[in-house]
Length: 165
Length: 201
Image 1 (cartoon, each protein chain N blue to C red):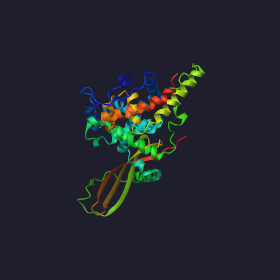
Image 2 (image 1 turned 120 degrees about the vertical axis):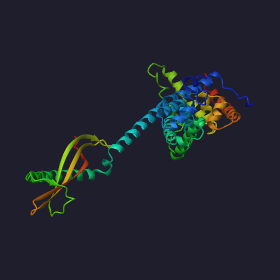
Image 3 (image 1 turned 45 degrees about the horizontal axis):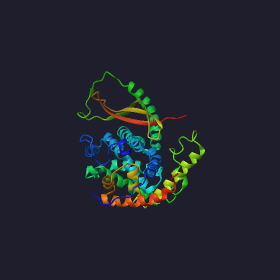
Image 4 (image 1 turned 180 degrees about the vertical axis):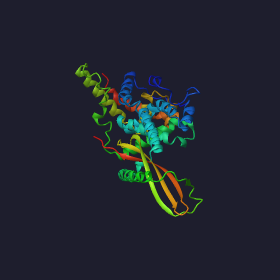
């Protein structure tokens, strides 16, 4: 305990100092908690977005490229689908790894599904396209009248920037 | 003490379940609610310390917000949970000192317009203009009187008259002995007495 007896301000002076400080500082209280909660929410939001959607961070050019690729693939898929439809269906299919046959045909089919919309960190809306791709390779031996087919599936998710008005 | 009755006690004396130590340990495990409770408990004292350096309430408010965010990000570095108040006040003080150094144009309390707070003019439409003027002058006078105190003394005065803390509690937050706090308060009162005497009606 200190032995110094501090001189006291009188009641009026104490009140003036306290009133002054309340007038200056009371309006600042509560802001730190509000800012912290805001920070906490944005932090959690960011973590969520990073987990779910890492692709938009790669930049707008990637999205444009992806859009062009989707269009090209859809065209290619339509052509491939027609080609596959013409193949005879009554010939038994065998595992291509067990037989050695001359290569005949390789096609790639794609189906694109609408995965809904998403708003990225800059507030730009994007459409999510989920694409399933099948690469089909067919072999055919004319002498033995044998056919073989291999199908390799692949899944992809593409984000296409939408127009805003 | 009037000011402390409005908030949890900032330097201890709380129940075990929501003691500062328990809250700090929870906050170190990234419990946001526990940290929000710590902010409520220590915001006023941190504000007093920052205002003691900056003499500008808006700037002090910003520093306090920043100080708590930094504290949250560095919770793992706090080795003595019971000293959270001292620690966060230290962060706020350092940030305030850096900010003052960087921003030469910061409005100081010596500038008369710095004291035009909303509290000062809240009843301006109903008040007598002479009373209003007198209140304003008194407010500016107190601001200048506080500004005239040295940097080491001002935070102790604000912690006493805004937060209503004892010398021991102020000493804990500012890392000073109670005797050193009393010495500063004594010096400050001497100075304030002279400056504020002229304002009495």
